[in-house]
Length: 211
Image (cartoon, rainbow, N blue to C red; front, side):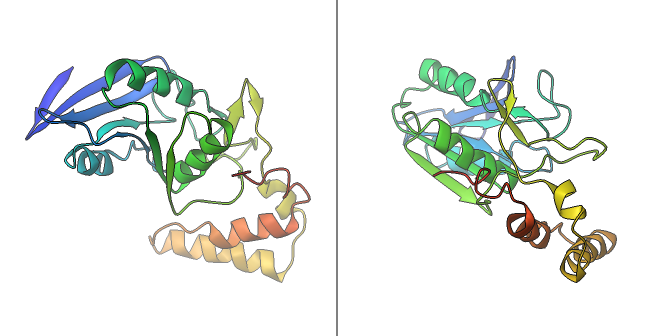
């Protein structure tokens, strides 16, 4: 489905695990290729993609969960989504020799993971509120899992369950901070819990993103 938005051409992308939109200017040279991810809210960061496309970038805005052929929750998301994205931009975008990957929040975590795994294909990475480690997936917490997988195997991650087993004043404060912000309908903040995971989880170094 090809749509016109002001000076942009917007194409819906529905190819297996590749779910989202491509955006580019109707006329003029491309300033480069950007693959864009949103965060744990489940979006594709369309507003940022539209902003970049209006500045002459060719943009692929992608969902990474909650859509057909993707995980229902933000758990065990296959990083091979980048391989599909790389194939798409190589075929459809005129200027795909320099690729920037941009993500926000959990999407920024994904962008850094992709940079560590596909450094030969990615020229630049933009992480907006990223993390230094791979963390547990988000959603129903009955069964904890990594946020990301590679070749069907979970990428090592920091576990919330392991932190819960080591209760202290610090852990109680971190969880209360998260709960109170949620109840008061303030923006969700995982920082204090994430800091505890880095400090208390013996798997900290293994799950650090090597980039």
